Length: 298
Image (spheres, rainbow, N blue to C red):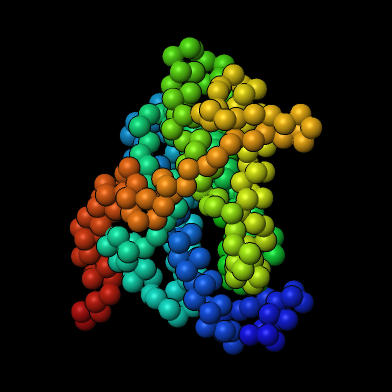
């Protein structure tokens, strides 16, 4: 491990066929598997809104975003499967059985069109910041290369959310109220996506899978999106929110991490429905996988 970590400290990049410590292999695999699960479950959030999206222009955007997210998931499952710990099918079966983890924000349901805008504006921005921090110094070559494509597409998703938010900000009072309700629902889950403060001994930081501590990424997101939302006339659902004139920074106050912990136990507000519907779809399409796997009769 000492020589391996020295290799990483020198900027070494690990490839799938290289010798690597088992701890590193398993930690990187778990990180990529959760990312893959999150992309897939996020795509299902978008899919729910394809028939309900207002207007042809937005419907086309939601279709494209759904395709992007599910495509990201399958690219990541491919990278994870190559590490030899689980097959793609085993990862999907674990996810649909409630054993696989995915990010907290995909344990919530989009109730209105305003929620879809808040997801694109706040959630996608948080995910993009996290992915950019991984890409920056990522020591696992296959993951770093696939992240380049994912990040470029996630950037479009965030810009789509920004465009929608600005349209709503200039819209009717009813539209503004709808989006304010969405901000109230999605601000804290978006912030909690970064997780609690990183542990001092975080191996993913030491092994250059992550390049920034959770609290640094979280604070950077707060400093960007709190003034943006306020500037467009929306309020932040943080009763202890304050601006420190000396430090010239926003402070949202104490963070309740219990909602995040519930999602990690598959106990989020929409966990059961989301996992149940995905599992039902997996079972209903089993005949397609069997047909593809069986040899063609001659």
